[in-house]
Length: 483
Image 1 (tube, rainbow, N blue to C red):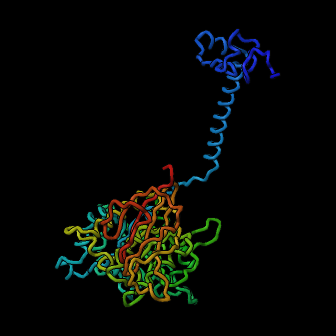
Image 2: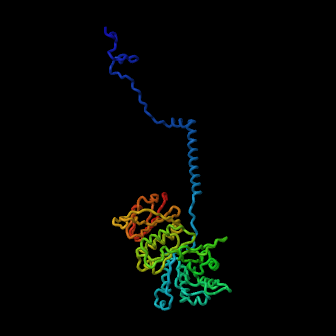
Image 3: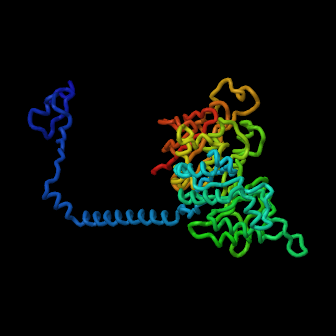
């Protein structure tokens, strides 16, 4: 007898308990009833006000508001503390000789030259307004005294001048043009031949009389050599007292010393007031030489100066040794960007720069550099940092590429003050050099091109794609991120 013979359902069908009649026997009936889909609907205004007015939401809002103000006040307090404790660069109060460009001249003082009207005091006086316009602040007058002049007495000393009235005329005209005049008395026997009593100590009385005489005429200072007999603590202390008699807060009379030795003796007397005997040290970038120095010698001299620690004395840089014409512009850029006051010499280093009738790229370069140095704090009293780094030779036929000699370095340094830095790049080699992209990746990406020796660089796209041409110098102003 077949199973389920009396069943009312078909084979394999599920009983339709609880379903309406007739649905349980249908094979097309769904196994599970469909779940109705809930559609989200936004709350209306009344519902939102009712929900927001609950005690839970009120407490949450209060907590969020308090948390916001606490976080905001904490950030403000932290920012204020950082600003207070962070070291801030304080601008220095520079003296006139620390912001000055010195210009060394040696005019002919003989009456014959004055009559011809060339290379004499009258010609210098005519060019004073132009020199002032290009940034010169003081003239160093050389060749005023005879080489064998002495201060045995003031009368003999003043008679040793070619023409005293010419110097006084230059002082008058310099005052009109707002140019100071400094007398170079280097190699002059400032102690004379006087002997005090029975000792062999020379008298300083005539020397101080000489200083007073010219200070009364309006001379701003004097230049001596570190080899002069007067270059001693006792004598310079007496001279310092004379300078203080004629000095004011705005018009300080100064003493400069030319450094000829490798090591300069101490120039500060460690007393209660720590008296400084000399205001400015005139130092040469290049060593003395009869012949123009090679690129290797120039590079070594520059690197030595850049790596030497900064001294307390204010420095006035001069060229010193002989250099090729190609390197003169590079050295001019170096002198104008180093800490200190540059001192140029007429008819030697930059004679074409002062040709006001035929302006050229040298005039443009000099004007750009002196304008930047006069208004940029980083170039006035910023810190100097020497940057040694690698370079990649751009010439496959370079003499350094297939020899044991390493690639010549690009000399570079930073002048830093606050958020601004000046990057100075110097290529003293007769071949183009490219910067290594891996060098100092921490340099800021924001920068402004300032000057180059050729004054022909504009629109540089990448700091690391710079290729320095032979004997080229670049000055680039960098900004830290966020400035």
